[in-house]
Image (cartoon, rainbow, N blue to C red):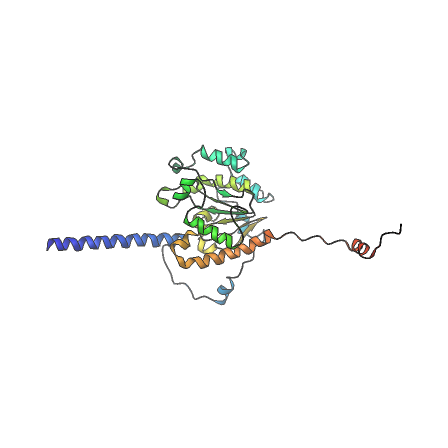
Length: 309
């Protein structure tokens, strides 16, 4: 009898443990979509305006209130709004930081390998600077390296990275040609845990130096942790696929591809959002129009004959 009760007890404990594990996964996935929330409320029925919002959004003008804070976080100094966005990024780096004397990704990589920004830098196998074209117009930013990235010292080479490559290829882009991919953190957190806010803050100025060196025209934060660099109080679910522009730089937040690995139903949504990104990028890839010839020159060339010898 006692043996039977113990068996039932152990079975119940195992069931509760599995249920708690699944609950933790669900909560982590919820935070990835909408950030930290305390209550779940019923959403209103979709309206016609909601349906129309699925079309490709219009980029707000440079004077937009949200856009004016694109590279101006709470701890930033008062910045000259007449400066280029890249100069504003550089101004976010503390004046006494050695990063100011570094101008190339190669030098940044050397500096990264020999310095410790956060405690997890001391336990990494390899620092993960980034991968792709250093002159790319598109810069994709994730949250932190995973196990495979830690082994190889290269960004986005695990399952999520392979999915990202497939989605980018579908819109005509690749890291080999016209994309640069990196993470906010440059070392793998233990057990792939979420980055701590202090880690994001400690590594943010290194990311600023990367942006200043690459000078991309479109920056894509993947997931809520990358988004928090610029919008710490917003959810990725609310801002995804909504461009925010400052000068010539556009911020275009998107779900992290890893979300589709946890929930296959999100893959279609992620692909649709990347298709909108492809439309924005199409404007960058289009060749400039040939200038029209002046009317007088055109008339002269159209009907004139060379003089007789």
